[in-house]
Image (tube, rainbow, N blue to C red; front, top):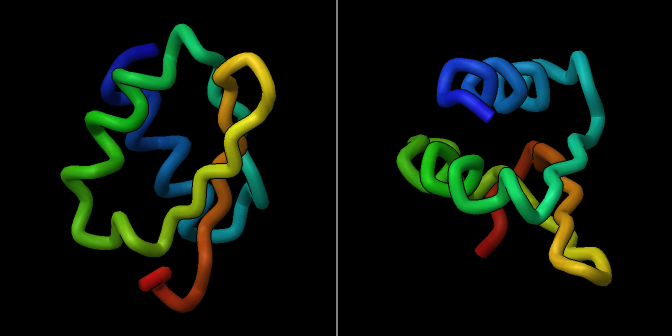
Length: 64
């Protein structure tokens, strides 16, 4: 997954265009490396699945 695609997905989550996004274990590290650089990083919640895949959601209130 390219950095440009990741930014687009994260912006769609933030804008409410999509409610959650599934990230496979193969794309997890590139996805997370882009995510942690964002100012609104704490608004994203990752829900780990069995096998290493993750569902990401955007929260209106940042997590602690």
